[in-house]
Figure 1 (cartoon, helix red, strand yellow):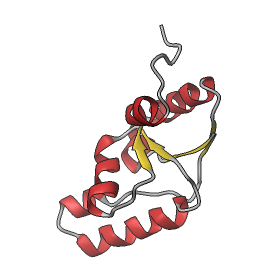
Figure 2 (cartoon, helix red, strand yellow):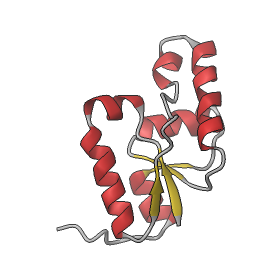
Figure 3 (cartoon, rainbow, N blue to C red):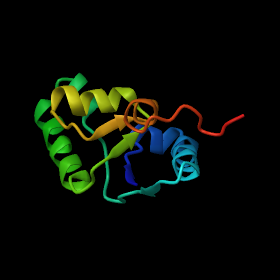
Length: 111
């Protein structure tokens, strides 16, 4: 299955190894991971700081970048929560949620 990776702006800047590990796990499970290079921020920081118009623009950008994908995964529950709860974007999942609840994975082959 093809899965698009949304790494988040903070994750990309401070914790790039998380994105690489996410790809490694999903590929180990037999999925194709796509990383749209046009991705930016989901708008959560703007929304939380009272900059709703700026957050709305970033959410629209997210939809433009990721709209063609059936599944989008992010290793950030707060970004996923923002996109789903505030913007109604339903095809985005936090990594553990995707693995357990959508894909039915109980063992990722880690030790």
